[in-house]
Amino acid sequence: MTATATRVLVLNSGSSSVKYQLLDMNPDSGGGPAAGTRLAVGLVERIGEETSLLAHTPLATGGDKRETEGPIADHEAALKAVAAELSADGLGLDSPQLAAIGHRVVHGGLKFTAPTVIGDAVLAEIERLVPVAPLHNPANITGIRTAQALRPDLPQVAVFDTAFHTTMPEYAARYAIDVATADAHRIRRYGFHGTSHAYVSRKTAELLGKDPSEVNVIVLHLGNGASASAVAGGRCVDTSMGLTPLEGLVMGTRSGDIDPAVTFHLKRVAGMSEDDVDVLLNKKSGLVGLCGDNDMREIRRRIDEGDERAELAFDIYIHRLKKYIGAYTAVLGRVDAVAFTAGVGENAAPVRAAALAGLEEMGLAVDADLNAARSGEPRLISPEYARVAAAVVPTDEELEIAQQTYALVSA
Image (cartoon, rainbow, N blue to C red):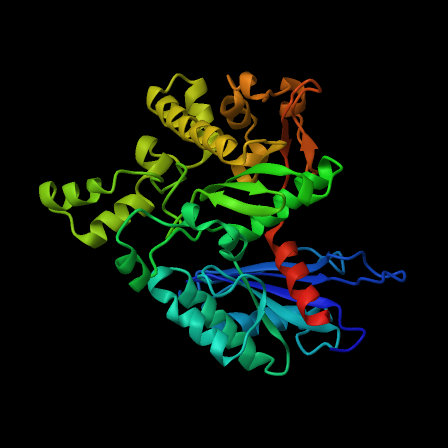
């Protein structure tokens, strides 16, 4: 890596999409952009369809968003199209300023506990984990291979969603099933959204003016997918998602915690296949299963109009949140802050107020005015007298991936 190579391209490859950001991690400033400055952002969606869409915004030049619609056959074509858009702005993949490409990889199992430069052995291990992440790891692998073909000379770094949670003690990570069976099939709690939980827990400590090692935080990542984590002194000690992202909180379309016997019952009594149950629990449950909507704004609008089904869905969502806040308070013993993040956590004031309502005996409270105020910055929403801080901390998974990638390749 040359001394001037300070840019990192972050790629998040889904089954039919590629999200990307180009960031300058310039550590020396010297009149240049601040560390973590975004130079370009974009999204390719509907890959493999006639109506593929590439949306690209060149932030470095202050240009307007450019959208191109038309068939993009596969991820290789998608990344080549992204490279062309970046080149048009003087930010091409062939630039000597590009230090590395950082890839979001959903599942790293127990082997990968930190960002890792991708070689053949690493890629083989990511492939070996496909059975426990069949919806995500194959797409991540495709993105990695395509990027390697475009820039074989450039470091490619995997940043794993599961890595932050590998610090969980065995008693939190193990399921109470036969040990030999669990070990043979890698059945344990891995947790996900790790880059977000790492970033938000660290930013929460900064907001409190403390070092992360001094702070215990409950992080509530509330988006269409939702997860909670208990972070003690900067280390995850428990998290709500498990072997897959299905366990835990009520989500947009996922059920979260459920009696495992429900699946047997549905197969025996309803005649549903394994695939039917999978689709039900992952895509037709959660908020959308309860009330037909997974957009919290729409659910709140319906509640305001007196819709009882929407109100029940909201109450179930909040009940599960409170259970996890209480459980993680017990796990941590001392809680310094509860941090809300992601789309719902950052924007839905009624969710934050309802989740903490009635928890005053636990030291939690919400200031109505602070909670209602909107801001893109980390902020406290608790009154000064609250023993436990309540915070809204916007997550930035792309910046976290870029920071981890650059720290690794520049070390």
